[in-house]
Image (tube, rainbow, N blue to C red; front, side, top):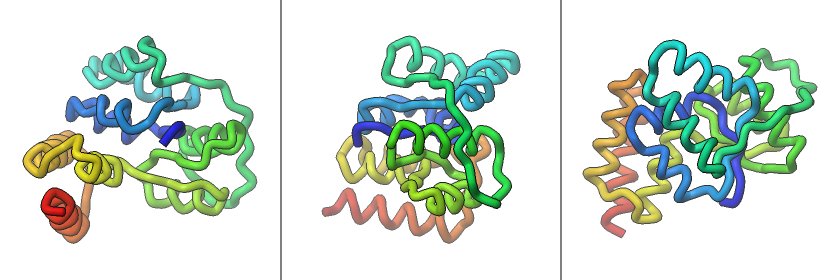
Amino acid sequence: MDKVVSNATPLIYLAKANQLSLLQSMVKQVFIPEAVYREVVIEGKRLGEKDAYCVERAITQGWMIVQDVNIIYPLEITIHSGEIEVISLAREKGIETVLMDDAKARAASEMAGLRPIGTLWLILKAVKNQLLNFDQFLSTLEDIIHSGFYLKEEVYLKAVRRARKLTRD
């Protein structure tokens, strides 16, 4: 993938699991709107969260880019302002793929003609691309869950089975 627009949650959990580099190795440029920057970096630093500093470093390195956005959101679905900015920025820049985890926001992004991917998709893709082996996948998944990432048990089991299959193929 060349470019994605990311919401806060995937950045936070990847950084908490020390796996933000996976995103960098899989995507050339990650764009984030101002609302996401404020949530992840400004608020995160105020709360003393180490993930805020990891995301700030990615911005300083230049592969993650903070952008102003003109809100273009004609949908009736009520979602968080950061998610609205993600969808608007993706549409404004002509970027097809958005990185977000919230189910309602993912549905809204699909209705806006975008392709949502999430944190779990990203780490499974890292397994497929041989950036993570099975044990590293499990460790990463465990780290993000212990940091507060919610997965239904059946989704967790399906992801583990998928990762095991990918490492055997």
